[in-house]
Image 1 (cartoon, protein in one colour):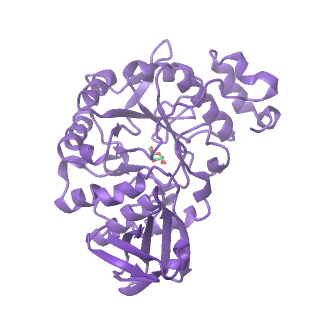
Image 2 (image 1 turned 90 degrees about the vertical axis):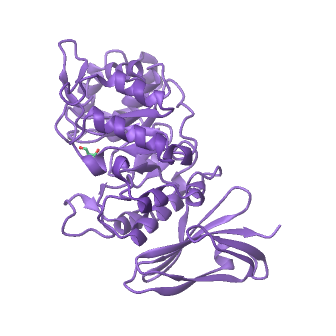
Length: 408
Ligand code: GLA
């Protein structure tokens, strides 16, 4: 925890001064300390759906209810998806007492009724705000209203808050996110705190006691690598992947690196690329937050998002994020240890042509003579008693993802 004086920047004082209900004990000994423990939620990476990647600001209660209906009926809920998260643009204004007011044209029944509906489907409900005066979409942010907003969210039945970083000027991210973390803990409800700070202030170095997950980069683009359709602040799947190298040691149960939400099913990549995207996010122990139109999913998209073997890797109870073990130009091997001694392995081919690749047992800390069963998590083929190395043909812009189970 850094010394309080290091944070003494003017906008921060404004923000804190206006949070009239901050417990004084939070600053005992001149340090900013979290007065209550972090709720023990998100012990495995959160799984759900968020409105942003597909709908952007074009949201309303019918679309959010539709997403909840589809999640419950499509098999996604059964596969482990839980959270339905409304991203930016649900807010309209603040009332005369400072309470946040939802856009009544888009959400005529109100947010509480929507939360109740989502809960009635056996799902959980998430919402979005921002540490600044304005969200990235220029709607009211939470600055100066952190405690009031957290109480409002708890009253509505919010289970998950994505908290963005637009219009924060020269604020200290650790200070601002800590204020909202305290407000959420004081709200009386266990709320997953999803920090969307884009990695600028390296949240992985300080946020494990503050949030449950933190974005590590700017926004994802529905592209294998950034292309002419990507916005200036967006990155493709491989661009984001490269920025995760070295961050793996900071993740664990209850505190995850977040390489941003999924683009699977949004149309900008091939099915092979989407399988790779989904596999790599599972390797990274990333939150699996679908970002497509759940009400209009192709069978192919559905099958990618509900691949139980890949999801099991993401949700593995050991909670160790995978790392890049081998980089040989366009050919990479990623691996993560799983509970019980299995290893998940991805052979990634970034090149324009198919390529035969292999993983050596030494890369997996296994002896050359050790026998293992190798299960391909997409084709479901099992190779028994494999020794020394495992080889496979890997498609261009694709992966082979396997689970290596050493013989008992
Ligand atoms: C930022 C976030 C996105 C999304 C938008 C909404 O860009 O990084 O994930 O929430 O704001 O305006």
